[in-house]
Image (tube, rainbow, N blue to C red; front, side, top):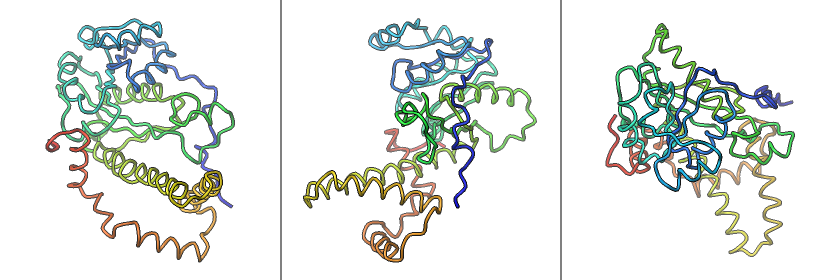
Length: 311
């Protein structure tokens, strides 16, 4: 019998995440896709939130939600946490504008590790850098309501976990009280912007970059799209009825994941032979090279559209 992970039992259902009223948070790029998501959740807290946008269209979208738009140049110096919810390719440029104005003890929070790992973010003594990326609701999460099923991305109804990194965490000895307090503040903000959150897992910046993109995008997302490509080939090239293809494929995708990742049931002997054929036909023998530092540097440089990472 397989035991269910207690973190998958939706322990946060119906709970509202609170932030200290004394906390001040600024969201740069508040009208973007991620900026709107995190702003929607922050808007439910009691903290002081500044929604920052520079483009006329972005300002209009923020104001249409009934939120006042702030100038980041005016509020960066009073904010405890500044969230850069902007595209990866402009994170460096935006950080150069914001970081010099931030106060001692504050935290610059980005939502993807690529720019931090590549060394593109502006730095300032007294300002910590953190990155937090949502894990999204697990495929094995126990969902009990239509709202939870509809929330595939997370941040609305379905609980998710978050993986985060704090600059220099791998070298820190944990004795710095100010650093510990800043980490606690930023974790509170992380739990609010991605709520409902089951847990926040702290790793190094490099480890977070290895998880995203190497494990998640290079491996998981690529395989997800490949599943779609193979399904489309069965329908469009082999002429198998679409309903039949989806019926057998969707069910077998789930049982394949639970068998492989959780050991729920053993694959049959015949299935194992077909899987071996699939590996030989589809997977390159040197696939593990994607975990090399040089390959990680290369793919992140491509994602950020730069010549090379600066680390």
